[in-house]
Length: 92
Image (cartoon, rainbow, N blue to C red; front, side, top):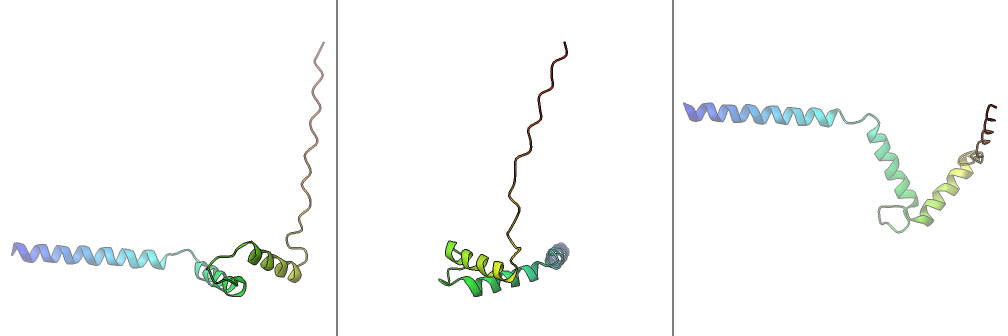
């Protein structure tokens, strides 16, 4: 009887853990699949040496294509430093 109770408890625990794991997988970040798909498409198009990551030349090619498609992309206004505040004149 003790052995049956132990087996039942172990099966119940296993079922609970399996359900929690499956639920966690379902609750993955929304849009993650789309992000992964986009990443794979970018690699397929620009990863010429097939190493699974983009090197400097491959990134440059990707940026050039992006700039051709959208000339405004990446053209940010130059950052100018703020005008320094004038020091307050001491009271006499």
